[in-house]
Image (cartoon, rainbow, N blue to C red; front, side):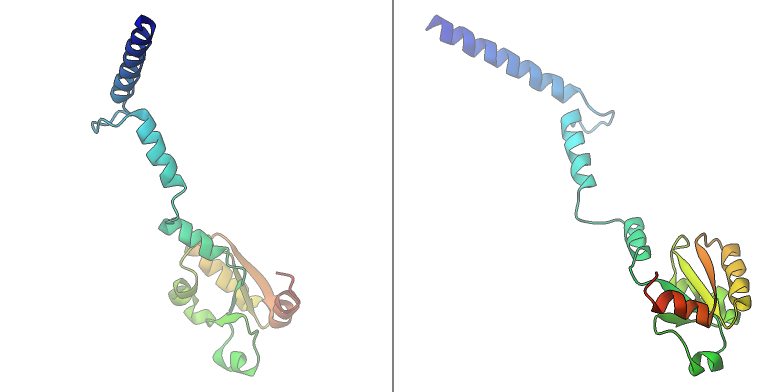
Length: 151
């Protein structure tokens, strides 16, 4: 009986001491949460099913469909264009790019008839802060690249 009481007392002391230590071991905030509670909450925040705006932007930028922009005139577009392309004429590119590419780190492919205007568009977009812009060249270059499934 004495042994049981001794074990019980020792258990209470150990348990009481460990709880007291964890309650005073805070993360530097005045909330009184223990380090273990804070670690648990921050770990659950890391694995939360909700995504932040920046994560959503990154997810959008990894869309399997490439963002291909045709900077030719309306008449050229009407004559022939890639099905996956978005039409934004060169003279409108700086004003309308955010409609299709709000993330300036998103990969953007540009093309025109021969590569000259898409080269100008690339320079303009880079001037706006876009970091991942590629001049694919002319319409036939874009057809070879995107209609064959290479990208």
